[in-house]
Length: 163
Image 1 (cartoon, rainbow, N blue to C red):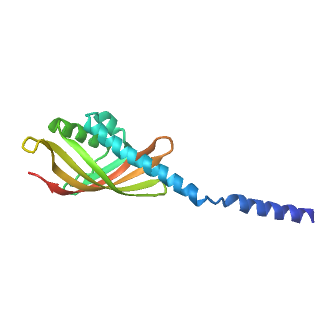
Image 2: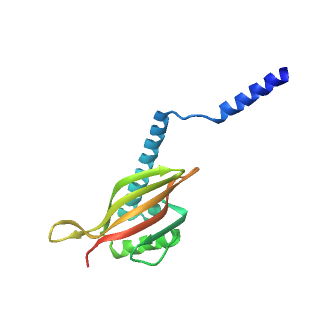
């Protein structure tokens, strides 16, 4: 009889401890914190590039990063991305990226970020920067255990190119 009671108690304890419910307000605060961290990654990456700090910009990419642009057949990894950033910086030293985050979806350790970006160059006639290239992109960020969010995948398609 005592054995049955103990087994029943153990059985009930096991099932009640395995199903922890997270309150809705806790879920929202976690999501809000993740969204803020993701926005910060995108903004800090853009700032690092715009200030010419390519080494810092490259640190925002995951070690398993892969990226592709629609008008290219190349899929590039983290080293090739770093080299591309250096090349663009040398070719367009006064150029700056402007990125607007349109949507963030988070799930299972990944964030899907839809962005509109333009590469701006000084325009001597208008006396202000003008876009020479614009794109829409999906950036997939992966949450690392100790590293926070990193850019894991990147897919972009040009929407405007000035030639």
